[in-house]
Image (cartoon, rainbow, N blue to C red):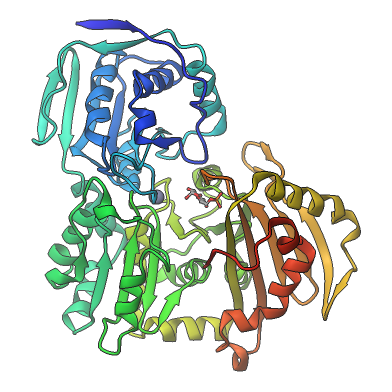
Length: 542
Ligand code: G6P
Ligand code: ZN
């Protein structure tokens, strides 16, 4: 039976960069999740009997919301829901299922790399039929609905068990519980040369993948151990836990320090990698070298043709504006399109759908391709492995020869976290005020050639995004970008992205800190960071 339950609206359900994200206790307020899910259905459910994919990263509160969402889907006219067993689906696997099964969309429960548990974070986002995050037009319509919602619809009977594979019914709707890994692993087998990678591993090549007790554990065990023959111990922290074992499932220098140290040890493995809470970010490490996400994008783009799925070559590359320009050099040399978009994966969707680009990436540890419409951590690891299997060189040697061919873009991101909001906004405001007079100004040996506040016009649908970050470019190819993070929860996070191009291979062995020293100093002079925020050093450097 379909019940209509009265509810009162919440005024704070505005989706951010990646859906609605709040602390778990916030989500546990009466009808908080129900209101948001009903608002999604009100906006998107146009036709009866459509299919909806539902899954999440397994964090605390995942199962409860999934069971509720299934009952609500049955009451809102869906014909079928496809659910990962035990409610588990990585974000890229959910994107794949939506596309492969021709679903109308999907509900993905995740707060990405944020900590989980009863006091941790939780999130709900809606993806559309291309498998990608809903665009602004849909998320703002959902937000409008949440502000006036007065009732939600739910099926009175409990949802069927989701720990067993197969089809069951809830009213007229089919609930299909699927193996969360199978379809995704098959997609990966269709893109990469598993025989070659298996041969590489059989030849003694050693690796370690850290699943950080998050969603990629079962995926990595199936792919690396069962299908590619890596030793059992090569996938660590493989069991997904509701609180990620108390850690931050964020594959960066701070939270993946144990893995990085393991790779730096003299008898460590040849290759290391990690992914985040919901499986869309990646970290790539070689012996003695951590690959920066911007370099990884450039190397993957330059070598993608070595993998069967990309053997015909790539159509173009897209990167977010603050990502280093290393990939641009690849696009230029290969004569393919290059697109610079604002921060956020959703900006790649139209370019991928239109076939203008094949590979996309961001400095924030995201890389992916047109195989799904989300960034994809394990995809990046497998493409690296496919390239290593073809070239039979170390990660460090591949980087070295890449720089020798294309030049090196030294790069660092400096994060100033929990800065006073007014101070951070004042800093950006002051930069914007000075933009017009910036060109021609000299700072030490650096001369500003161009300065602007980045705006983007989508070449497919013509939509415009303004105020996406201040860029200051110097003659000779140096660049400083200032922007405020769109994902922080406390105060403001100021991100300063610093980059310098070095064509001379004799100068490719510098520590980035040294190679960028003058630009780092200049960033403080131009941005007045110390003066305005009181911070003498960044909290995190990546
Ligand atoms: C999320 C988005 C990415 C974005 C990243 C950093 O992971 O999916 O597309 O690059 O956040 O965003 P921020 O605004 O914090 O720099
Ligand atoms: Zn993520």
